[in-house]
Length: 188
Image (cartoon, rainbow, N blue to C red; front, side):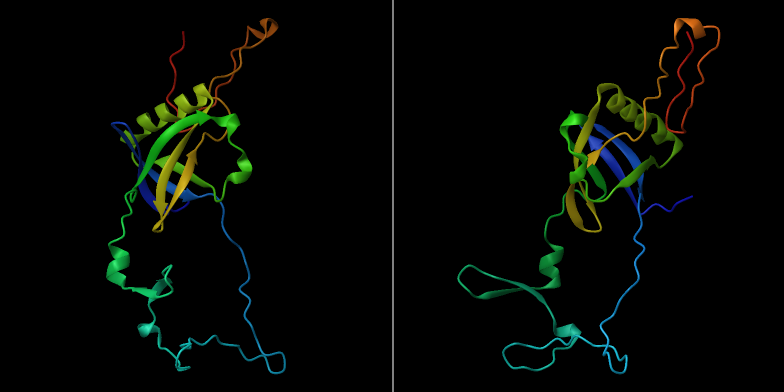
């Protein structure tokens, strides 16, 4: 079983659905270093102050930005901690739109969602089925690893409703496949 990278909740209106977030893809890269071609020694990057030319130790490095008037504004870690990040621990649904209006090439990194508990499975399945039945996707805002971004909640796969069998095949019942997140429907 894959390990959840975060525990968030999908929220819209007065509804809150706790979910686990799983990475859908992983990076498999070989780390390359800059080396000296003659002897294979690693090349290091040094932190040097542009004003006095001295090496700066990591504990004296701060973040800053250049203001429009040209002066540099230095931010402390306390300043950065006070920045508002309203969507921590939640996936706030902003609205819904037809799935065909969204170009899949704009997706950056895919994730899977799953209910955290058995109690969360029912509202999760209800949201999933509503998105599936209407052909819509949910546009949401979330923060993963302290970076806020827009997200799209979409259903992966096909409808849970089987296609109606042709008249010649009515003697056999169609097979139904259920995932753990879809409630069973009563037979009529």
